[in-house]
Image (cartoon, rainbow, N blue to C red; front, side):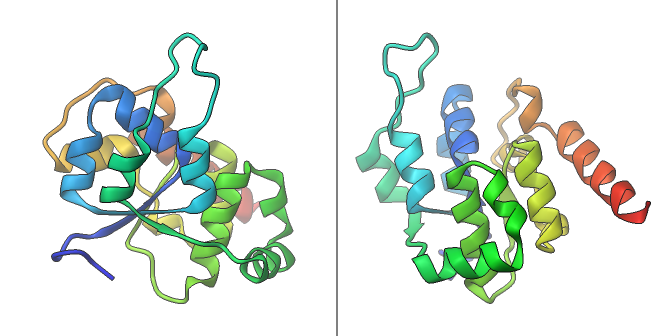
Length: 168
């Protein structure tokens, strides 16, 4: 599944938008074999274009560099039955995690900034595969000021809190 020896990274809508906002998208798709699911791609392409700060994603350029997977109703149902807490997160993140849960092979890297999605990913067994956009961008030699959700500090804090909560 890896493209030209690059590590596979699954990303959510928020990571796609933040990577475009900070100008590190090209470095990300150049350094990793980037994957996502249809729901995430659809979310990334739509939005209120008249909203201040709206980030436009070029669908054609995106499709040329990102592998987009279909999440079947059966995959979604299986994941929701086994992990009902997936119903509490955004549709794109839910489908991304449902796909990964049903995928059957180890995920190399998963990037999301959403705290609830991070906790769900930990519950699904992906804690050690979660990486902040900040860390992924550094591999491509990109040093940008990211919003706090996309930093190593934020991710480590949520992962540590989740681990603490499971021990108590």
